[in-house]
Length: 186
Image (spheres, rainbow, N blue to C red):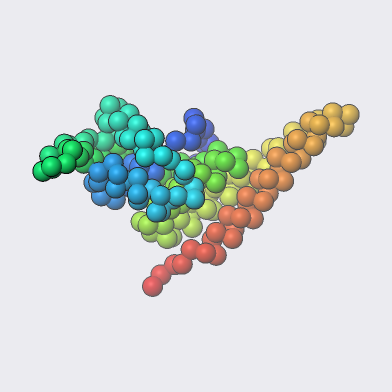
């Protein structure tokens, strides 16, 4: 796991890491990947089929995946994708990172990472929850310090910061609940 003081900011929170993770599990066609995304992470990612294909095109252009064309009799050709070494490195770096301390980053990015960690080893998923919780708690401490320095006459700044702190405290509680839902051992 990455040091909890190293926060990774995401830009736009794209399902590209979910697609890289699915390709790490096994090569697949674009439609198959989209179906797997919906089946396993559909409540986290709401990606259209065209968005999935656009991301696959971009990932291939960047060298993170490689596609091969497969001709089909009486049907259009299909592209089968696999993860490249560069894609594997990118995915593994993401897997060992800590998500930004925001509601959306935890709900989308962290839960996606947690899914892939769990499929590898439930103990790794529990370790990730603990590391993410520690990062959240450290961030809450910093925000409470900032709140204490806001002039009490700045009512809306105080309310906004208090709301932000409370949302993160609820995330800590939710992640603690997640730990109880992950079965360990057989």
